[in-house]
Length: 479
Image (tube, rainbow, N blue to C red):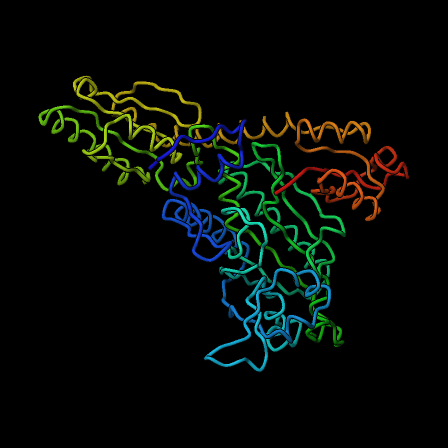
């Protein structure tokens, strides 16, 4: 329920984002600094997103398991690059039961360490491989600057952890799961992404390669939407995970891990929302259709509610639509229109006495704001098609916005000036030197969001240092 007017996106995008998350009933800050309470409207989006992912995980042969939240520090410290990368974010339990613990326990920032310690017991032979497992859980990373959904000290996610007999199998798995993330992000959340790999500076700690999907938000900042990591044999060597291969030789297993989080609820809000609130894709909208009855007298109420109730029951029962009949008498129709618009419901059906008399209903499309009259029968019969249309419209609008804000770099000065004035994605040649990358990032506050999965000839010298270009990099300021 809105209490104050939303800030304009163009004037205060961060303020707009926080207010729309709160006023639309998605989430609010928790009592502990940096924590978040996900409210029912927000959690329902996560449930639909979780189901879309989990169905695809199972279709690709993965099973779910669960590992403990607490990880002995000795396990975390055995993979040097991994612990170094996560050290600033790890929360540590030092006391329990009123006493100091003999060994501190890390609250999981991710689970590679404890899982690969266990895989050492589960894997003995090539016949035990592959292990294709996934975990739905919460993790804690001690963030200094937090924002609801996008970056909180505790968040929900899934983390896949697979083990393979060969490098080729592991690489194929890494890219397969990246494609699952792309499919869900684009087809379910209607958020267009580009796929690529991270630079060495931006890789997941302990990975040989990190692959990513990146999207552009309405404020022209990038958002990392999901990552899939080829871990090589690093964790297998750290935790002594070996197996007897087909040739009868001992070999270390090959590993992947991949994760997708509740930050994508925030990403969906920032991709589609407008000055009036959320625009939720029908695939994840908790309420896909809201019916708002309009009446003044008791007699009008009886006739209007009779039609509205029948339509609700037909949509929910015969068409499997997530539908809500807003029969609250304490609020006027105009209030209800604004509230459901704020909450991002894809379609609104308005029914008044004249509509009942004419056997019709007014349909309002949240994506484009279109309003049209249909017979009640036509509205019911075409509701699925209309919802599909909203889904397609949101995706098409987001693609157009991204493409309009993707630029080619012709010079370093143009890049710096354009980034400051316009934001967006900037693509151009780079020398591949991590020091050059760091200098550019420090000066511009932009990072290389991705490189092509398969290296491409950049066709020119590095846009910054002038050395021969080795990569074609996509830069942006990001969340």
